[in-house]
Amino acid sequence: MTTALCPGSFDPPTNGHVDVIRRTAALFDTVLVSVVENPSKSPMFTTSERIDLFRASLSGVENVSYDVFEGLLVDHAIDRGVDVIVKGLRTAGDFEYELQMAQMNAGVRQVETLFIPTSPQWSFLSSTLVREVARLGGSVEELVPAPVAAALKEKLA
Ligand code: PNS
Image (cartoon, rainbow, N blue to C red):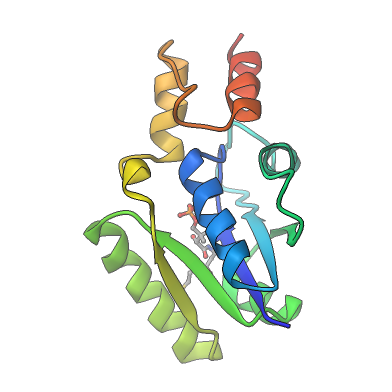
């Protein structure tokens, strides 16, 4: 039984996140999607709202569960007994940053990271841009799952 951990801020979940999680769920027995709780940030959505949005967006995917973590990702990974961290890579810029974290996490606590390339149609997408477009009145319907688009509309109304 292999479990993959997909961690992130997911504020809010995008089509890119959902795509990476779906593809990870097809490769591993179970996937744990863990939302980081960062007390120094003021997110648009609470961690439990973000998990609810994932549940609504990934309702057909049976082998996914959800969690929240604070502090070091490797500590959370070991605590939950996952086999591997899985991250989506959009660009070479992502790779540089993610490689450093993956090497740190493998070096200090022997937790390995696997990278999965983001589907090309989502390589430009980020939660930050989605929030900005939504705040400025642009359409995000093509960028995020329908429950997220509805939640953004409600939040910004
Ligand atoms: O969606 P994001 O913002 O790219 O997710 C980044 C996240 C939360 C996975 C990353 O910042 C993280 O692992 N944070 C927890 C603290 C930590 O372990 N930092 C890395 C030390 S090598």
